[in-house]
Image 1 (cartoon, one colour):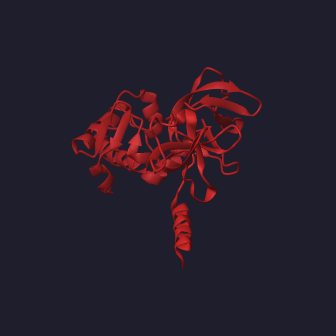
Image 2 (cartoon, one colour):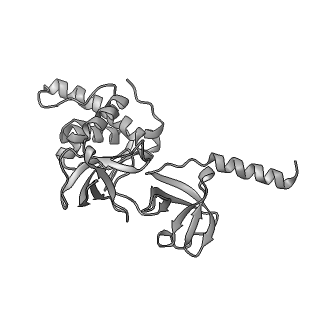
Image 3 (cartoon, helix red, strand yellow):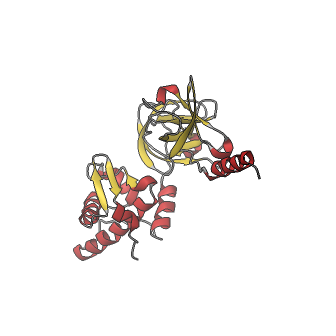
Length: 255
């Protein structure tokens, strides 16, 4: 095999090793530069455009950029360095900006609004109101969409992380409460391990109803679990959420 064939084989292997996550942040290498932006390595699907308005100052070929991948108005895969308010696999409160005969569109911090079809609306969404939604990829259209029928997603996540559904804390005795806190600390740790980059946007300033809607526990229980994990140096507390430490990422969750 000559040198040119070797180079071609190496390029094909590199392309096949590129794994893309639609609706999430990806670390992709800049492979070429054009007047309208940079093109990022996209593996088998081809290079992905990062429009000029999103290109960081000084970015050049060979750099690896942290970008979010989504579909533009023409359903083309596009990259942006902007941070959306929600990613695939996450819950968030978003504002409805407009509606039409197909559904509602919510502001998630990107140029193209996030679509919520009528069939996925718990109540009919209205412009200007905020709703808690879950972001996912529609199996049929492969579009990033959201749903306000969040219980089915909470149940799936809960069963995946703990094998049981979240339960109410209202009738717990003090002794039971301490057990619940310990159990929830483990569940919160596992939740972070399954989250993108070990980060969760929930923290001690999050509204009580958001915490209960997501985890099924009181804010007090949530804060005590956060304190428990923080004392063990398993998480770090940030202004916009909590994040696993290196120790937290490597430690196992005991049953």
